[in-house]
Length: 107
Length: 121
Image (cartoon, chains in turn blue, purple):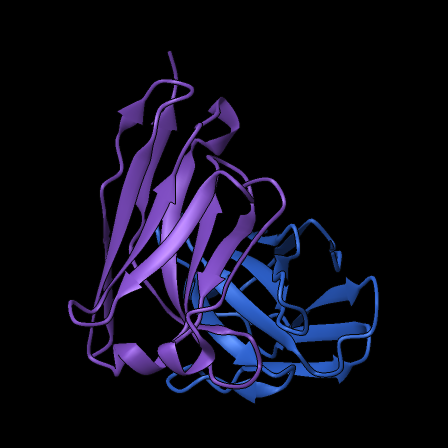
């Protein structure tokens, strides 16, 4: 199975900050990389698909980039509602896998 | 509006069986793949398996830890997918989500609210 590794595992930041999360695949996955946001007690929400495509309704402060094995998710200016856990997920293989998540906390 | 509603979660003993349902609306269910994803308390997301559409022969796939114990099925006439779980173990305890598969990039476009399965004696 393809292993997905996210870094950091947690991150403290302030409203207005620019933050970047990284995700690395154990083998090349092209652009078959998706990002989700999850808040406590809620289902995950799709933010970015195909590495850089913003899901409908997601604010433009979210952006994604990368291809092959290395990917990033950037939030350009943190808003209070952005504090959550973020997961990457590869869609390249039949057996889908997620990263372990990055928890974004308020500094 | 796309909606997915899971049901059937319960407290069961190790070795027992349980069947979850995922009722869908707001999209063409019969054309869509349906995935199950689980999350143990305080842990990350784990993909469980999926069933494809009739056009793709209702093909199923499962993660190794549930292969042979769990079975995904669907009833397109009822817009409902199912997750049959047999020989349940304590480590199967989790919130189980169903999700609609995206068309091209293996993403999960829409999710249900989840249903809790607890396996404990």
